[in-house]
Length: 211
Image (tube, rainbow, N blue to C red; front, side):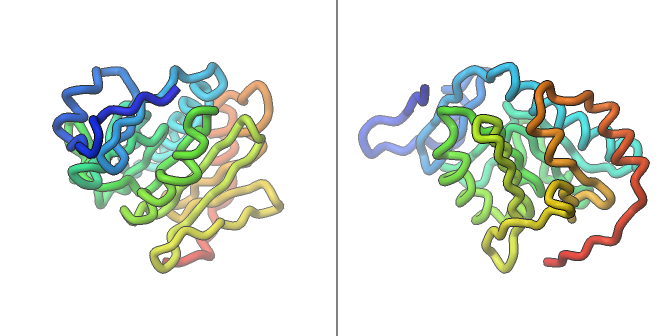
C-alpha cells in the first residue's frame, strides 16, 4: 500500500523527506510526495540481492572502481525528487557524486523490481524521472508478468535495448558485463556465484551501441 505524505498543495522537500522516513524504510520522493513501499516479497528480495551481487562481484573481479548499491539509498535529483532504485550502479568517473547518505544526481544504471504497489511508478513516474536525470540505462524486472525491459538513453529519450538470441543483454555501462534474461525469470533464482562464473568466462565483445 502506498502512503502519501504532504498536506493539500504543500510539497515535501528533500530534508523533510529524510526526517520523515526512518532508516531501513524504502521510500521515493517524487515531485514533492513521499511514496512508502510495501515490504519486499521473498522473490523480489532475492532478485535484488542477485543483481547486486552479480554487478558488484563482476566489477570487483575486473577491478572496476564503480559503486553498487541496494535500495534504502536515495538519489537526490532535486529538492523535490529523490527516488531509491532497488539496485543502482555508478561509473567510476562519477563515484565522487556518492555521499554518505545519498547520491547527488542519478546513477548510471537504475534497476527496479516491480511489485504490485510499485507497478505504476516503475513503468511511469520513475521512468520519466530517470530519463530526465540522464540515467544511462533503466532496467525494469517484472517477476509478476515474467517480463524484463532494458531501456537505454538515446538523444535524451529511452529506447528499448536489444537482446542477443532473444535472451542475452549486454550493457554499455559496465564493459564486459552481460545477463541472461532467463536467470531473472526462472524459479528459483539461480546462484549468483554460478552465473558470475559464466559472465567472467565469456569472451569479451566490443559494444555495438553508442551514445
